[in-house]
Length: 260
Length: 353
Image (tube, rainbow over all chains, first blue to last red; front, top):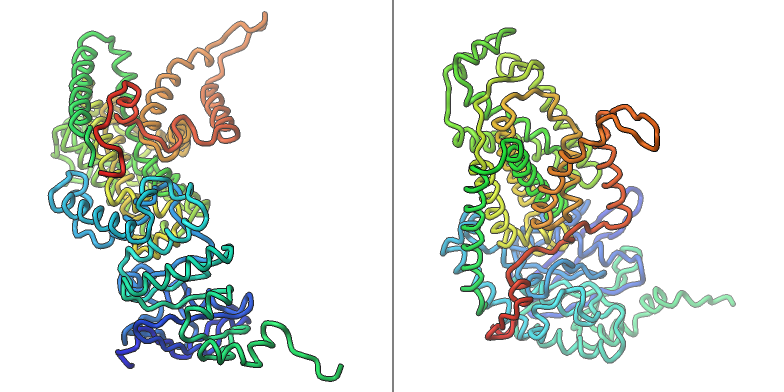
C-alpha cells in the first residue's frame, strides 16, 4: 500500500443479512485534503464511517491508515492510531463539563496506574496538570474557553457541535471524520462552521473526511467529493464535476422520465 | 488551581480528627447494641459505595454483589478461625489440610477476603461484562447464585450448608469505621481521578467513550473488580461482626438491600450512599416494631416476620416512580458548597485559574 495516502479503503463491502449497505467503496485520501462524502439518506455514509473507525468490520475489503491495515481493529485502538470522529447525533458526556469532556481523550495517554491516581503520586498529578493545560489551550483555540466549566449539555446547539469537534481534536488525530457537522444549522452558522473547519485544518494539520447534506458547505470547502447511492459509489470528482454529473442529479432529484 | 485548597485540606483533616474523636467516645460510652448497629451501618456503607461504583458510576447493572460478599466472608472466616474450632466445626468432612492450621490476624484476613473476591470479580466479569443492561443483571445474578451453590457444596473447604461458627469476633468501632472511612477516601480519590471520569464517560455514552480511545471493556472490568474487592472486604467484616456465617445469608435479597441503599442515596453519588447506608441500617433495626404483634384499631395483628422488607420494597418502588434521582442525585458533598454558604470568598474566580 502507498504509505503516502492517509487513508485508503480497498473495495470495502458490508452486508447486514441480505442488505448490502456499502458496496465496493474505494476512497483514497492524501494528507491535508478535505474530502466530502455525500448521498441521499440511507446511502451508507455513516456505515462507511463506522467501518473506518472499527465499529463494524467490513464483510469484504480492507482499510489502510497511513499504509497500515486497520481493518476490523477495535475502535479505541483506531483512535490511538490517529483517527478521530464526531457523531451525527451529538454524543457528549452529559454528566460532565466542557473541559472534562475534552480531558477524557487524554486518559489514554496517561502512563500511570489507578493506584498512583488514588495516592496522587507525582507521575500522575504532573501528567494530569499537563493534560489540563493542554485541554484549556485547545478550548482557547476553538473559542470555548469561556464556557470551560459549564455543563456540556447546557451549551447552545452550535457550541455543542463545536465541542464535539474539539473533543475529537483532543485525541490528536491526523485524520478527522466529521459526520454531518452542519446538521440543524442555519446558513449563518454553517458559514461559521466552514470557516472553523478551514481554521482547524491548518492549525492542526489535519486531513478531513466529512459527511454533509448542506451543499453550500460541501461545495464550498471540499476538494474532492464521493457520492454514494444505496451503498454504491456513483461518482467521484471535484465539486464542479459532481455538480454537473447526470447520475448524481438523478440520485438526488429522481430520473427524468423520457416517455412522458 | 483553587485558592481555597488549603482551607479545604484543613477542613478535611479536622473532620477526620473529629470522626476519630467520635469513634473514641462512641467506643467507650455507647451500649453494645448501639455499637453493633453502627458497625453494621459501616458495612452497609461500604457495600453501598462499592455497588454504586459499578451501577451508578460505570452504569453496569450488576446484581451479583452478595456473591462477592459471600466469597470475602468465607475467606476471612476460614483464615482467622483457630485450628481447634475448625476441628470441632468440620465434623461432616474434615477441612482440607492446607487450611487447617492457618490462623491469621483479623486485618490481613480482611484484605485477603477482598483480594479473593476481586479474583472472583475478574472471573465473573470477564464473560459477563460483554453483556449490557438487563442481560448483565441476569448474568451477574446467576453468577452470584453459582458462587453460593459452590460454597454450599465444597464441604471440605466451607463446611457446606452448616456454615461456620466461632469466627473471631471484632467489636470495636475503630475496625469497622476505620475501614469504612478508608474506603470512602479511596473511592472518592478514584472517582475524581482520570479513571473515574473514564467510568462516567462509559456510563454517559459508551460509543463516544470508545471513540475517545477509552478501552471500554478494560475499564468496565476494572470498575467491576474494584467493586468486588470492596464487597469482599465488607463480607469479611460481616463475618467478624456476627461471628457465624452460612450460605443462605448471601441470597439475592441481600443484593436487593444494597441496591436499595444505592438507589435511595442516588446513583452516582458517594455521599448519597454513605447517608443512605447509615439511614437504612438504622431504619432496619427501628422497623422491627412492625414485625411484633400489635393492636391496630382494636384488632389483634400477629407479628409478621419479613414485614420490614415489604416496607423497604414499597420505599424502593416509590423512589423509582416519583423521585428517581434519590437523595443526592449525582451531587456530592464538597467543601466548596460549605464555604460558599459560610461566605468565605474565593480570591480568584473559577475558570480563570
